[in-house]
Image (cartoon, helix red, strand yellow):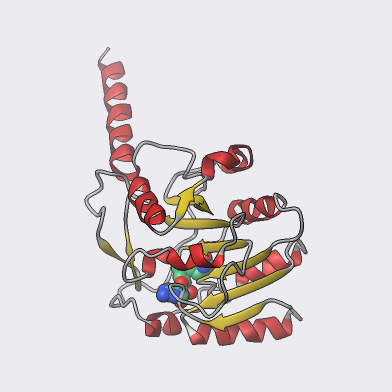
Amino acid sequence: MKLAKFILFKIVSKMYRVILFFGIPSFETPFSPLNIHILPKGHNTSKSKETYDKYYLNNGEWNQDVELFNLITDLSKEFNSKPSLLDMGCGLGDLCFNLENTELFSKITGIDISSVSIKKANEFKKSHKSSSSFFTSGIDKTNFSKSSFSIITSIGAHEHLKKPDFSEIKRLLPNDGICIMVLPACGPFHPNRGNWVQKGVQSEWWYSRKDWEKFMLRDGLRNSTKEYKNIIENYITGKKKRWTFILKPI
Ligand SMILES: C[S@@+](CC[C@H](N)C(=O)[O-])C[C@H]1O[C@@H](n2cnc3c(N)ncnc32)[C@H](O)[C@@H]1O
């Protein structure tokens, strides 16, 4: 009896901790923990371009994992013809190069605030004989014309803006376009909810799923993840540390 009580206590306290931190689990957070923020520890955080110029080199991979990659390629098949893709906050362009290899996209473009990352991406582009394009640009304001891309990916990028701002995505997507967005996850009761949190050399906003959804709605994007239930269910694995949204323009 004592043992049963002890086990019950352990289970309840574990569940309580999980819910406190990540909120009630839902299929909007389908991915295993992404390999994020493994930069040198102990540096002063800065949200500046200089930080990313200095710490761009993380084998080119901050957040990538195969499940996310498969989700993007599966979603690309939802279009009648090959979609164009913009990766916002592309770093060294790793995601772009890997997606290009699938030949599922008509054109792939990556942008990043770090000119050092983009220079490196352009060097890889040459050695990979890639046709992807890379530009130094903020993700909150670009020079691309309206409705330029069918798919936009933002993998661990928008939480680094000074304020949550998704309006440029809305401008760049046509009505039938989609955005795949990965953001830091925290539950509604997490002490860091609504805070600018230092993580390694970076800082980022932490919000609950509903908080992020409100910002997205404000900027003209709705969370359409449920519409892709069949696709996304293939990717529900592991712990839930990042919110993953599939967004559509309103
Ligand atoms: C955590 S890394 C993610 C990189 C890549 N998306 C990945 O998943 O591997 C964040 C990236 O966003 C870029 N970034 C941060 N703030 C940005 C901004 N305002 N505009 C454009 N890029 C930005 C950084 O330079 C960095 O490459």
